[in-house]
Length: 272
Image (cartoon, rainbow, N blue to C red):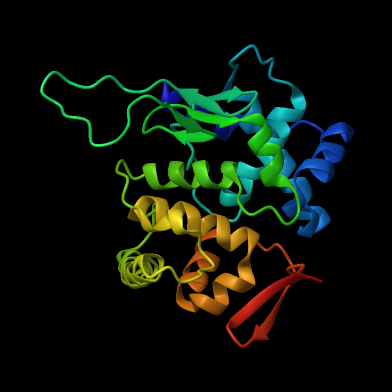
């Protein structure tokens, strides 16, 4: 299945970009406004192939629309359009879209298992990426994350997980072409992750959301969100990490609309 899908993605002939797609991009993907016209067209061309070759499933009574497909595909494309490799999303065969936050029922305890926390409430999910499985997204969270000034972006987060999973394991490292790049990635991320864990445990404010301290995989996904949404804050706090993410994503987004101001407590961000 995956080899067929990869071949299909390589051989597809691009179609003319519909005018409606440009309007969707403008309305729903604030990051794309920082792209040059040529890069915007390249992003939409990539999205066209991805949309056509992916199985889109509406869940919870939702009918998946063209707006949903373009919005999700364009944000996912921001992570890979600068990379020379192909098929980094080779195992993304399907995307499940829910209208809003999914509430999972509580997991039943095993026969010999003792509860360590209250079990009467389920968990809430706005996005999930499964190894060799689908990506799950809540549409309202997708829209919220695409707006200017959004604190997080569920599409960037979950598709960063899919890049991590492209190596066949989930360890916070996407596919890297050389041993030297892999060694640099490991050294920088190990140091940055340890610092983030320590600062989070101490209750200190961090540019990267505290959720990134839960595991190396989550650190990569949350750091990816920060790189795209708060690049100056990331560079100020973790310059080496910002540099390797810049080398990896090659996003070429142009000037950031964020400005970093020095304060007695470190720095503060504002929209320019």
